[in-house]
Length: 233
Image (cartoon, rainbow, N blue to C red; front, top):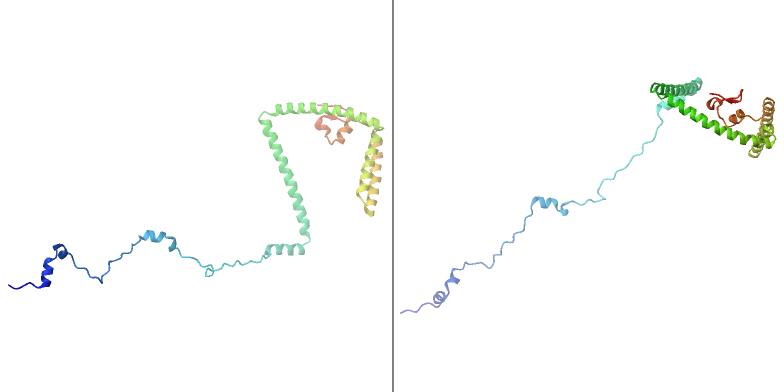
């Protein structure tokens, strides 16, 4: 009986598990698969935003536009120099514009008065006017008594007016230092003294009308008759 080959005998002696194992080549490497990112993730990655190079970015240069005078202003200046009557027309236009503004204000006042009269508030306004006049007259009477007493202590109305005029002239002398201005002050002094003498001839006593006029109060507004020297309605 022939003996079996040693190699065959070794193969037969191996376990079936080792025999059924597939053959793997030592030269073959396992596949390394890189994870593929989704398109949305790639678009949102901060690394995907390209960096700007300041040296390569274009520079913006602002151009300064020279300011030129409008042809209209140049034409107006030429017209003014060529036509001297333009100034007179401009003065007339300013005066007419001022007059128009005054007329508009008067018209608005008249319209408001008509509205008040039509609304039935005229009686209420008359009551308020009467109340105001009564209070103003009482205050004027108290002030007149005090002022008349002080003026009598000073020597009367003439002495009080002279003292007031001298104080005003003294103030003008202190404020004016130039010789030409000093001459003007001297002329003004003579005019004021002449006016003072004329007023002294017309009125020599301190009255209610004198006090109200010195306070720039309209006699008709408060309801005082300077000729009769009494209150009127």
